[in-house]
Length: 101
Image (tube, rainbow, N blue to C red; front, side):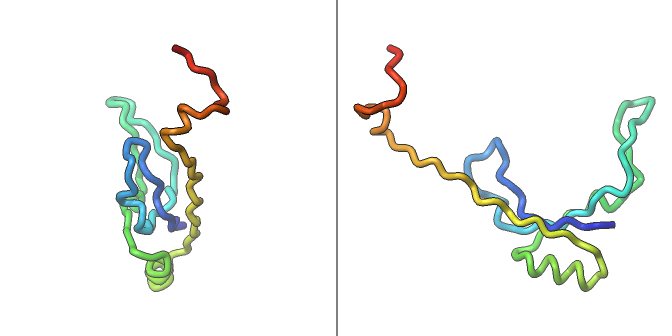
C-alpha cells in the first residue's frame, strides 16, 4: 500500500495554473484492473484507489503519511519550459521562416 505524494500537472485543456499548487496523496493500485465480461467496465477490488487527499505543502502530506504509518514516495514537480514570444517577432528582418502569403 505505497502512497504517491506529488503536485499535479496542469491539464492540457486549461491555460491557467488552477489546482496545481496543492500536493496530492494517492495510493498505488494493489491489483490490476480486470474487465467485466457482461458490461465491459473495468473492475478492481482495491478501495484505496478511490482515496485522493490534498495538502497545501509536501511537509503536511509527509506528516500525514508518517502519522498513519503509510509508506510513501515523493515526486518533485518539474519546472515548466518557458518559451518567450513577442508579436514583433512575426515581422523581424532575421526571421527563420519565410512568409507564406
